[in-house]
Amino acid sequence: MNAQPEHTAIVAARDDGIAPGELLMDVRNVSLRFGGVKAITDISFNVRKGEIRAIIGPNGAGKTSMLNVINGFYTPQEGTITFRGVERRAMKPHHAVRQGIARTFQNVALFKGMSTLDNIMTGRSVKMNRGLGWQMLWHGPALREEIEHREKVEEIIDFLEIQHIRRTPVGKLPYGLQKRVELGRALAMEPSLLLLDEPMAGMNLEEKEDMSRFILDVNRQRGTTICLIEHDMGVVMDLSDRVVVLDYGKKIADGVPDEVKSNQQVIDAYLGVAH
Image (cartoon, rainbow, N blue to C red; front, side, top):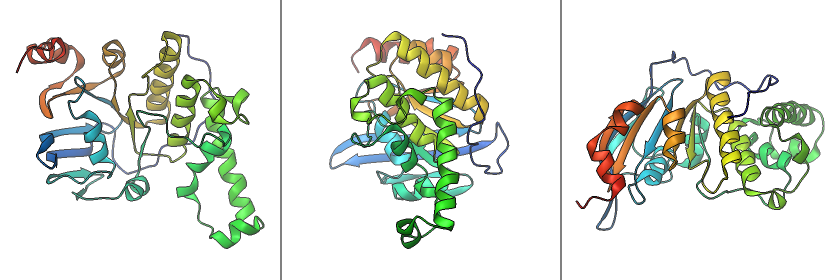
């Protein structure tokens, strides 16, 4: 990977009162079905504060469904998720954001006609306190709040080294830079837990190296806990502290990277051994 440059200070992850290494999230016996199709069956794992936790598995293993349950897009039929000490089963995505969960998507989900700066600024909306009336006037308290949030966004732009595209409509950007902008929007929410759904899908080697560096910086410099899905096993083994492996919606392994990559069930799953 490229050498890490010096970065300016960046918006800090929210202080949730949980010490590094303690449980931030506990997924317990979660099952999700769509009609007669079982997407996830009795999945349990946890995420510790400050770690990079990977969820891996072959296509159709239930990885994205698991992220959708965590951030409230899907409601599981069984099981619970405890996040920052609060147990729940059903939650809406906007509630997840307010509780400190942000995410990026497998397919880039940006406002293509808006600039890089404005896309990242949308991530600050959850932090804005002034009502619509003040924002329409863009005067007094609303103006001061807008300036404060723009300063936070500019810090993120510097951190992600995208100053040169700050005014560029994101629809005109190459795919790798669009993924970086989407990461910036998620960071603008100041999450306790950042969910990354295949952050390097479709990237070339150089783009993967850059994204890997930024993920490490987000984790180490900001102390943000990360839970990611990624198909590049080299990236997963280099970045992750612990890895949970799904296959056909069931958990088949859970542990540190060296344990997981030598697990015979994991090897069989990736080689396509018949079940």
